[in-house]
Amino acid sequence: MTDGDQRRVTLERVAEGVYRATNPRGATLTFGSNHDEGFTPVELLLAAIGGCSAVDVDTVTGRHATHERFEVAVEAQASRDAGGNILRDVAMTFDVRFPEGPEGDKARRLLPRAVRTSHERTCTVSRSLEATTPVAVHLADEEPPPA
Image 1 (cartoon, rainbow, N blue to C red):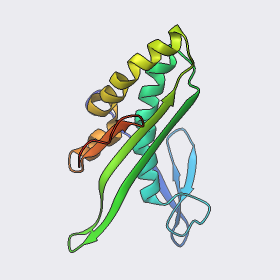
Image 2: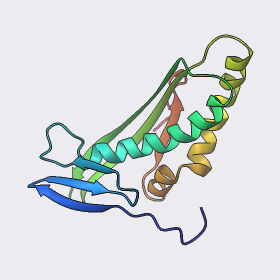
Image 3: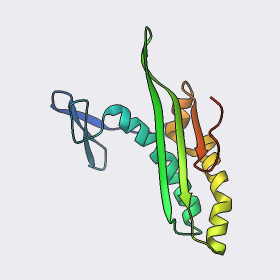
Image 4: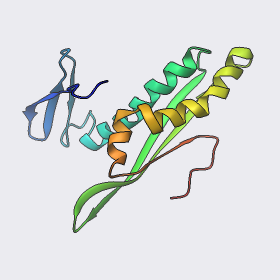
């Protein structure tokens, strides 16, 4: 991506507290605070954080082995104070497993670097948030970093 690349979605109100987002390719997603079957805006933000890094990590490690398990959990503490509502203590945990053998071994060796590189350089979503809200990232087999 170069400076000036524009990203855009449009929102249309479907009902009270329910909206439809449409991207330039025509894909839609319905969500909202009153959409019982769907995501809330905060859940979409958490999904975007995890999804952005998942794409990065999947691309790098998937070149070497097919994942037996690939799960990313993103959690945050919702906080409300005099300054308003905010998410704090955002944490993302990768639980990724590969098959035994040379290809799986190579993917396992690449996994920590792929997670770190996504977090530190390539994931636009969490990097944008971290300008004001730190996002802690770790692997499921590791101890979470201190808060």
